[in-house]
Image 1 (cartoon, rainbow, N blue to C red):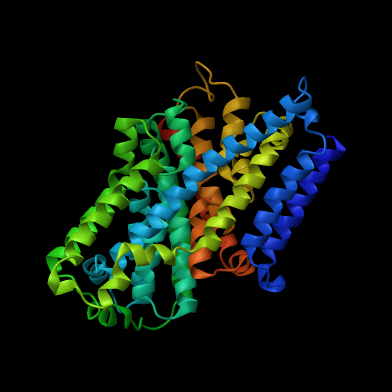
Image 2: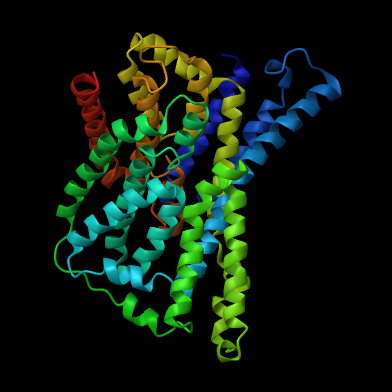
Length: 446
């Protein structure tokens, strides 16, 4: 490994530590992530010919610029998806679309609410995706739970359940979509063999966390919110079905049009925008308060610090990918493990909680060729475990998944709090899922 590569890795690790210590340094994680992004690529430019041999002069710098722009384009699709989903959920919430859903979840028992949130998140993330589901559930929790300390625990189970639910669905997580589209796994094989491990990875943490709650839940959000909604019951339901139903149809949009999912999100946002504008254009709803619930106003409430953090961290990880660090790490794991696929994928899952799971999975897909038979064949142990571990492993750290990053920004969860309270719980569920998969493959689908 060259000195230049070591410098980039060292700076990335330093930035990661600063993000982890945000509660101590009081420096916003988005600022650190943006600095990481720019400095890592600036160090790359000290000697770009190291990573792009055969090029020189203007051709070399043009190739680097093209490389960054390509990564930025890929990252932008995620950012636009995130911004669109956040806006849709905010519009539905502010216009009372979630009122009847909250009424179904409302209970006086803190423990019962934990289980309802866990299972609803788990199955929703398989239909939608873990990112969108996390946004929806956090918006619901803000109306259901007033106590912030309690809400942090509920938000944590949302992260765990969203990642677990996304792991057994071919459309539930970016990594499963990658593996499915590249035909390393099939939808039938993933659902039948990964569903039980994913369920274990959610149920075990929920079982442990339920004992952290004592007493009954005091909720005032639902009652206070209903009085501020100006739309009729029929209009609120229309807003809900256009918004949430549209989010659920995004995978179908992607499947039939082969266009990026963020375009489906923008289509749903446009339709929801049009519907709400038609509702508010009537004379009855032309009030001063209605302006606060229109899309033009709600767009200004997007949490841009979360968006910029996402931009910075993904682009910094892309730099690590270009210098070959992630692929090198995968090769080292393969050598050290002696080809034990359970061990390799388990470690990859742990690593996915530190760096983004997308380049990790992409690196594995490039390093390990698809075989005609055995563990590396379609729906083989390696690829199914990779889908599970890369998805569920991200729950072990709050910045280990897109769902965690969004929840971290929305609920202001610190890295240290999550590491101390939640990491070991998520790890217990992670190991339980791997153990159940071993039983399934050894005795049921042997």
